[in-house]
Length: 315
Image (cartoon, rainbow, N blue to C red; front, side, top):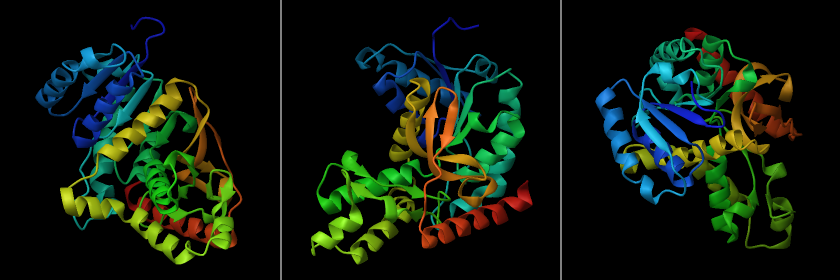
């Protein structure tokens, strides 16, 4: 067993997303142990070797090694980025059948180790695969989290920061719903600093809703634009996963738009979907059931409907 007060994170999948996570993880010095697992064991060994060679320059010592599923037993967090990637012209939902089969096998192997920590899922379609992980693991819903719309919300904040010429860290705005084509912006709650965006539009004629609608389209379709140019997206999601990891391991009670299980919130049940939630050492402490406008609620309901219809054949 591991020593007391040692945080162990296991990463399953050492492709581009997994390695972006691992690299960011080490550079931010957020846990003492990082285990890499991949179906290609030599790849995992090589990545561990390469990462270890940079540790003299990391902010804190980290023990990194390529491991087995048995290493998941004492882990605090298992992060899954394994699976088939999204190809050009393919939607995230197109991946559902192929990656569901892969996930059922992974989760079975993790749970056989005696794992009782938190799962963090990034593989697409992330909302559906988070649901699959919850069902297959038998863990409480609070301990199974998807990356959800954390990255979409970061893209949203970045682009709004560019538009209003302010630091994106001072932009408070969220994308909710499916991590994909039916996601939606919560314009009614979006703010720059402490001022609602609707108020800014009224005060300054150089800003307008048409620009913002186009901005959201660029947020929603960002993955397609990046995949078209470089074949895959991985830096943004890698850093998003590290942000969620920090919120968990540091018991932050931070609010992030993760994929969480709805049990009556937003008038929906039995679905994992991107919503603002309070994240701490126990996983999802609480879902923020924010008041949406009628139009926002209708779009959210549509997003849930699409997810449930896509899930039905594989569950």
